[in-house]
Every structure is written in C-alpha cells, then in structure tokens.
Length: 330
Image (cartoon, rainbow, N blue to C red; front, side, top):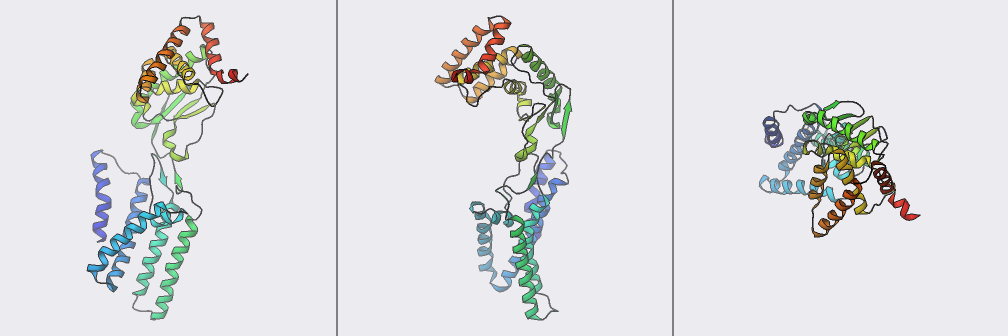
C-alpha cells in the first residue's frame, strides 16, 4: 500500500519532468518527501483500523473519511486545521514552503502513527504502552497546533527560487532565465523608451533596476524609485513588456483617473516610444465592445491632435494630463 501511494505521488511529476527535460531542485523535493512521510503515517493508521475492523468494512469507510476530513479543513476557520492536515493549497511560481510548513502535518500524523506502533510493542507492560502511546499522540497534536496556530490562510513560504538572467544598465533588467533570449532587445527598447519619455517631459524616472516581481510570489516587495518590480514573465515573450514600463513611467498624480484621459496618455506614450502595436494588443485583450470602440476613436482623435502640436505643447499637454485629477479639484 505504501509503495502504491508513493507511485501515485511520484509518477505524474516524474513524467512531467522527463518530458520537459528538467532536473528537480533540492527545494522542489521538500513537498514530495513530506507527502511520502504522510503516506507512511496514514498507512499505519489504516493498518491499525484493519486490525480491529473487518477490512471489507474498514477500507472504504477509512478511505472516504480520511479524504473528507482532510478536504474539508480547507473551508474551516481558524486556519490551523488545514495546515496540520497536510492540505498545502496552491504553491506559486518561485515559492517553496518553509521547513516548518511541512513539519506541522508530520507532527500530527507522525505522532498518531508512532503512538499506534508503541501500542504494538511486545516488550512493555500494556498499561504503560497505552499511557506512552497516548502521550506521544497528544504531544504530536499539541505540537502541530502550537506550530500552526498563528498562521494565516497561506502557510510560511520562501520566494524567489527561480534562476534569473540580468543584462544592461540604466536600467539593468532581470527576468527568469527561460525568457533570457528576449532580454537584450527588451532591455535596449526599455532604456530607449525611458529616454524618450524623459526628453518629452513625461517622466523623471530613472530606475536602476527593473526586475520580474512575479518570481517573488505572494512575498513580492513593492517598487521604489530605483528598483521597479513588475510582472514581466508573460509580457516579455508576448511583446508588450516595454509598453508596461511606459505605463508605469507615466505616473498619474491621483488614485482615480478618467478612462479617456488614461488611455490618451498611454497611447501618446506608446506612439512616442514605438509601442503602439503593444498598446493596441492590450486594448484588444481587454475587449473592444461598441462602447470601448467609441472610446478608442475619441482617444485616437485626442492623441492625433496632440501629436500634431509642437514638442513644447506636447510636453505641457502630458504634464497637464498626468495632473488631471488635481486640476479638476481646484
């Protein structure tokens, strides 16, 4: 039974790794090894039940009960029952559970399994075996609860476990290495776009580093003036990463911006930096229903008019556009 459960656990990821010609990292083995240990603990529990209840009855009942108990912890509050049950939930890109995350369910299941095995020990006085077994099982339960009691819905994680590739300067750009073939061109186009926007008076941003924040998962840190963390994993191969940088550089001075005003600024920035195709792709991804198509006509008319003006007039327009909300309040 243990071997079968291990095969069910290991064969699917092994096939996936083989098909992609990928070697597992040490960190990636943490969850599978913990799951293998949990399979042993659950097998011990199943064996114990099989010793007391006819297997034809105990096997289906235990299988269903075990699945229900573990699965339903996902919908329970507080959160600690899901964490000590072995319910890991979703693991994001670049995320790895901390060691304490895999220890918590092992304390519970392992404590019960070790307690059951102590009951089967042939050399101890039976009452003593019962007391020691109960103490071990209770200790495992209390230890698991104490470990996970303060956790939120997401267990303790570490992030950033992704091989990165960096290139260039002013700004230096870093993306996961599987996107490395796109990086030199993206970095050059990004540096050029930022120079164009600064020369046009649209921004003063000079980030030292632009890095892919997606690899930081749920532990993503915010951007600063010198370090921009952006979601680049998909935009880089898709071809709109530079446009995303343009949008970030065109910083509005308020939290809420009129849609027409925002799109006008973004289209103007896209045209000035050679990213009009990426702008159009973005609009199509958002969906161009009749209302959106009419808005897009108005936006293009606004931007066409602005582009026909002098550079000084365009500079004044983009500065006024980025300050639109504040101007409306005055």
